[in-house]
Each structure stands twice: as structure tokens, then as C-alpha cells.
Length: 302
Image (tube, rainbow, N blue to C red; front, side):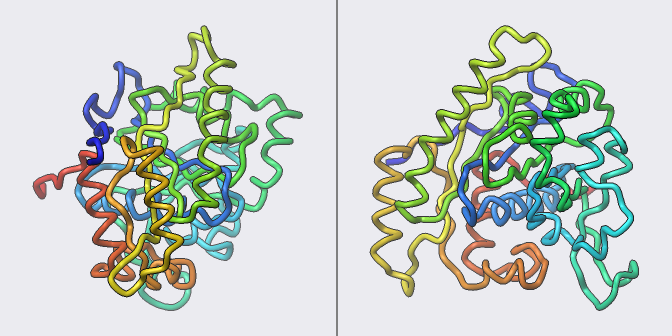
């Protein structure tokens, strides 16, 4: 029997009385691991339940930004997270309302706003962020951003790139045990074999920040999401072997499984989160279970 994961909201949305929001991040060095699929699904569902969120897209591939309504054309001329890193724009100048396309073109009536959720969009420039941070001494950009935070967001959802480096490090060092660092991986033994590398990376971050009074420096894996798991019609042996492996090694971290569905792949074709694209699909149902398991109960309508 799986242990019940710790709920991320148990200590509130300002852990230990700090001024910046609870951080929920999706991190693992694995391309196509479903980080953005899971991140956008959970952020959207939590927002629909009444929790004010800020989605930070740190990936130069911009998957999360597109799913939340902003492709390269929509972002033309707008500041992005790359500008936030180097101090060329403020958080509120970069943030845009998350949205869903409902019509052609780019005028306001072509989109429906997702309530309670803003996006800090990524750009191609983030592909060189590690070099920019190293050469320009921008390693504390996120530290300063959070210490000077004055907004009312309750959750900051951080979508990391599929690699470890200075950009992920600059954000992860502002997390502690009260935050939630969640690897989202496909039900594939090959992907699960990358999880130990994540634990090693986090140990390194904690070691480098030990005794630093300006940062928590204790990012901790608190949960794990396993996606593309078997269904009555999807019965391949490989996903089941992955489940057996995950339960053996990480059973105390596992959240409800996200079952396989071809609909989940369409979120990138349609630039639309699963809850809006296919609300009755297996993944949409399962992500709602995860949001509940994490402690985000639906709030009464105002």
C-alpha cells in the first residue's frame, strides 16, 4: 500500500512566514518526461478551484507557454523570463494572463482567460541562460525576485528545462522542504533510471547553500507523478514494469497515476491544457485527483 504523500498546502502559502509564494516545481533531466503536461494541468485545475497561481516557464522549448496561450507570434515584442533574469523587466511587466484559444487570430476575442492564473512566458533566449547568468553575474536574479515579491499569488508553478544547470539552480535554491519538487515521468523504466540523478543534483544544491541565510537551499522531492500508465485498452508490458519499479523504489512519493490517452498528446498540437481540451479524458480525470491529493480542495465561489 502506498503511503499518503505530504500535502503541499499543510503549512500554508507562505511557508515559515516568508513573503514569496509556495513553490511547486517540475524537475528532471529528461526530455519529453511530461513535466509541462503535468505542470500546466495542475496549475490550471488549481486555478479553477480558486487558488491564485503564477506559472514560471523556464524552458527554451516554450511548451508550457504555448499550452497556456502564448506562441512566438503572441509574444512578439513582449518581455519574457529572459528579460526578467537580466533585470530588463519586472515580474508584473512579464506576467500575462493564462488563456485558451477559442477562435482564430490574436485579438482578445480569440482567447478565453483562465481565471486565477498568470504566466511568466519563456523565450528562445533561455537556451543561453546558463551562460548569461555566469558571464553577467545574474545568479541571484530569482533570490532577489522572491525577497522583493509583493504580490498575492498563492502558488508559483515552476516548469524547469530538461537539464540541470545554472538557471534551474538559481530557482531551486529558493525552495525548502515546505515547497514541492515533483519529477513527472512517463511509465518507462528508462525514464525512471534518471530519477537518482535528480536526487544527486538536489544534494549538491543543498551542500552549496548550507549556511546561506539568504536562501532556504533545501529543495526536496516531496511527490512523484507517473504518467502514461496502463488502461483496459493500453496493456503494454513496459509501463507495468515501470509501475512495479516505481512502487518498489518510490512508493512513498507516488501520487495518483495518470493513465495513458492519445488526447494528452494533442495539448501541444492545439496549444490547450488538457482540462479544456479533453475534460473527460483519463489524464484530465487523473490530474484532478492529483490536485485534490495535494490539498487543493475546491473553494466556494466568491
